[in-house]
Length: 395
Image 1 (tube, rainbow, N blue to C red):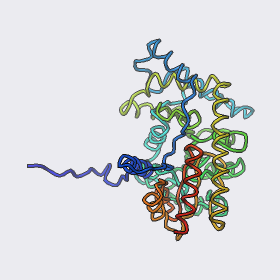
Image 2 (image 1 turned 60 degrees about the horizontal axis):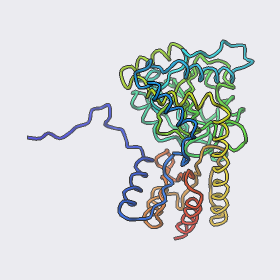
Image 3 (image 1 turned 90 degrees about the vertical axis):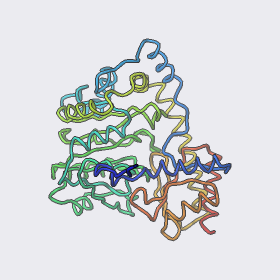
């Protein structure tokens, strides 16, 4: 006699990642013989720079195939700490140390470690909306309550101190930040970040700042980091990794910079989940962070191409749909716009079935009226997809 599976309360409410679901649907249609342009995934379409691959091979040849310290190899943590210390230069603080860094299996695990270690039943965590698909699920898995804070449409859907204050409750314990933003591509400038950090400090909130897209910006410099601006690191967790800036998504290396006590707690947690991140991948990340001239050159090529695709896509959309309401992306590689009729799911489904173009409905990000388009794809595919969007808009 078979018994049906009943999920435990730990996972009963978890929803599949919508971005992954879109990608899987696109692959299924492609396997069935359809010609599909997939603009759903959040993954750079560039090859990992050759110098990083060479460093990975060298590490393997040197025997980097065994366990490391749970929190990561010391040289990598020292490189991460040194970069953070440079960002804090002139503040008169103690330098960031390797003991404040925990290397994990991708920045997604880093974020989950932080939410598990910081929050629990009875806690509220403010999450600006639209938000990346996993923030709400991660907070929920920690048994805390994620409180969505809708961003201001007049400010590219970014939140303000007043919006955060209005959403806060006596149970509010933390705030999730993401800049440059997935899904909008919006970037908080230094003044905006500073004002938000002042509210968080005043209310004694923990701030988790997801800065994975920080080096993919179109201003000529990296996006402002909370490390540049926060008056204290005492209640600050900065999350980053190598996936986006160095086209290393499959290497699965992310990290947190956090107060030592919290870092120790996250290390203990990780010791009972994945243990250390992949050993050769850690050495690959070390090369990306320390061979800066080669890394900067590779990044510049990617950002130049992303900018060209963005500009082309915006030109096509604005010419074809003059009344289109969208966020002007200043970073990452996404376009976020309001769908016709205010129904993002319907528009995304129609676009996939009728035009063979996969995008992500905004419901995945807490904004069902909108859709997200990734331009991390070959330029001819991006152009063809934008023209398909214009056609489908008036269909």
